[in-house]
Length: 594
Image 1 (cartoon, rainbow, N blue to C red):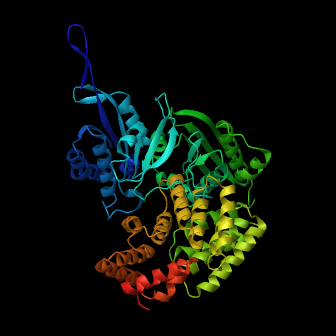
Image 2: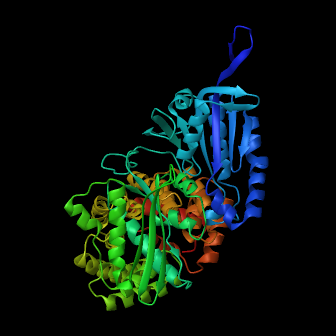
Image 3: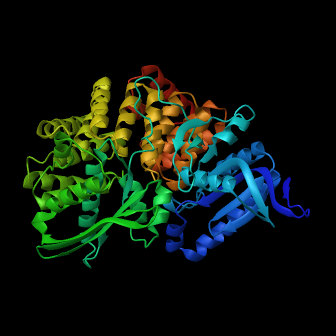
């Protein structure tokens, strides 16, 4: 410890070099809004059973608790970083009975720096940097400063990803950061990959679900459609980072602090709004907020006819682009504001249909098909409607909702071709065409289609995930994993199918331990997710855990009694015949019936 002394010998300031760990709970306000008493009890248990023992066990001390956050110091940065990773690894197995966004997750930042002591509290630039690092962490991850990384890189057997320099609030210099993720070892994008994170200098925005003020729950779909269309339009802009729908819709119906939301999603700007519909009249309000200081960059109220909806959406998009000083060429602006239909009713049917078929179950896809068919009849030139209809057939064939998968894939391809002929720039048309190429044995063609999708929609998490699936089908497993991870970065509350796709890619890369972690995470969220049980059975069989493999097969047979070994190739849809055979043999040995 260093003491700066006054002439009379009294201490002026006490300083020392320390490792500082900052952590907080992701989405805490949202969790509290849903269940205040239960969330508080879970937070207490988390500190008592996991966090405090890990910190003290590594020689650290908790300086203070701050609501959902905490600050700790360690004499050793190696111990601090190992503690952070230990906590996150153990967090992955907690609360297995709690599903989806209700699970408690942490973000952690670790810095090595100078601190000022005042009683039992600590202050100074080293503490401030740690707090900013924690804000940059992804859920379940750990972020290090460059100073901390240099001390641990050769001492801990952990994989870190260089995420470059970041400008953060109240820190005069850029901070270079390094990331660790429990999803698996991070890798830099390989040759030809485009999975790099957006530049820190790009404007970043989250479009929150517009509130339905109409008093009619059915109008909620109308409000959701408006939100999704604005997200889609903004995701076409390469100069912006746009958070995906899955993540922003996690806050639906919650009265939350916008600064907190922006911090949790890693964005600077937030758009919020509301709709009120009565008869043929429509009132839409929207406001764009700089979450760093809470200032309103732009706000507007639109009192128009329902028929003017698409004009209003265009105006909101243009106001956002102008307020954030994003320059578009005439061609880019035309693409960003392109609309697929002028028929409000057809648009509503498609908005609802796409939400339903992405639930991936044997019931909602039928309703989605009916809605999509209605949309195609109302506007036969609406590419999105044909793509939505095609997706209901693709998932029918892919997930075995009904018999004769080959016939379903052919119908899906028929609708994909029709959608692309009408408009080959619609993201859903591109996604469907990229996916249906696999069962038709046109794997590389699917990859090419999906790559063009990324060029058109550089900020779309789902388009990037479609590319990842196409790469997986074509056997480009490493690049597929990179793009799944990039999609997750665009979509912090990412859907289960991202995780499942990444697990499949890791299995074919023979990175089985990491794939097993993902499977267990999926089953923690969705205990009846069939594909995760299949993957788990294969992994456990390959790694000598025969009893666990048999238990997983038991769950498979419970969920899909008619599933047989012969169905697996159609489920995988990959071009790699030897890998397919290994998977089939592994599940046969684990006990899946012939």
